[in-house]
Image (cartoon, rainbow, N blue to C red; front, side, top):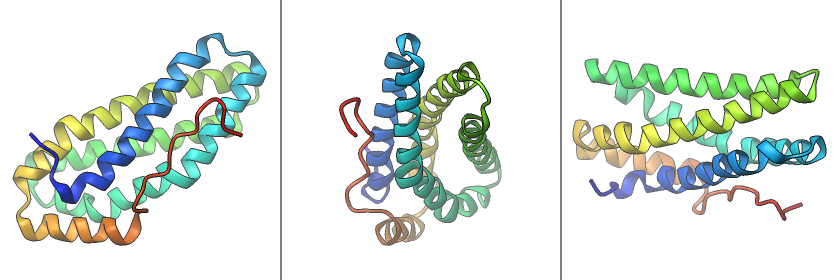
Length: 162
């Protein structure tokens, strides 16, 4: 199913999240501790500027609408919350890691969890939303996203970025 234009802002941001997840998957296994710290720093900058506001927007404009649909809405709302909390917890685990191995492990899990979360949202949640919500609700979501997210998504940092 083609993505509803009112959800496009979220999908565009998802693309950048997937770029970061792929970067982690590709770079982390062979990264030195210094390279891993640089990758972690890039992740933190992207987290603060892109992912955290994205999660906030999804929680604010989607969560109640999803949960109001009983099952499967309640199941989708539960998964959305669990995924967001798990990803947030992995960021905290990286912040408080006392060893490079702990941070490396949390970074790997972050990349994998983020990739799985975005793919679930795109393939299941958004597909369901487009059929479960009426035009008025989708319009309200689109208006909220337009008011609260940047017109162009924050790009995932690339290896050559400072």
